[in-house]
Image (cartoon, rainbow, N blue to C red; front, top):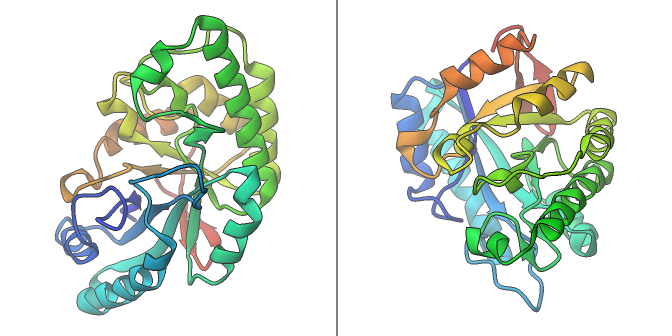
Length: 266
């Protein structure tokens, strides 16, 4: 099965319409395409231009239905969202998700309070080493809370803080282990996200070391490209497949109606 589940359209920060993405996925020989546009629950003191608005949700799912009708049996269109976990909006987000006809939800952490994890290297450069390490430590605590919320099915781009080439200078093994324990307990899937290959990090999310920790906990994985245009739907898949196979995974997953099925092959 050839899938791409982390894909953004013009509803958030992607370059192509839903129909263009679905058509391209069919032409590229994918078996399943999953749209997962950003939905960050709004807060009064913050603007997130790369998130769809709450008012757009109905039309988003209507377009997904229409696109499935266009391609018919040639391709399965899966209905997803990528949503940020923030403690103060989690209950409100839960109400929204409960009303959506979803196959899966990717849970991500792009913000720690007012600090944007992956918006710009400038934010990181303003911090000294101690505060950078503090952000990374707090990030893993937030990932733990994300898993414990039981709002999500897939955890998005673990170790996102390395995007601009910086990595913690302290040992975060304990914090990472606690977060992964929570992910395993929640029966979540970790995405092996190839987008980091195009960033200053030059590394897939998560790192090989974190993937080893996932494997010990028998956490399922799914390879994604975090695509923002139709040319990147399966970018870096061969490298990602080699990475996870070397660590002992034999298969991946398919999602339907918030449940996943284990597949015997990657």
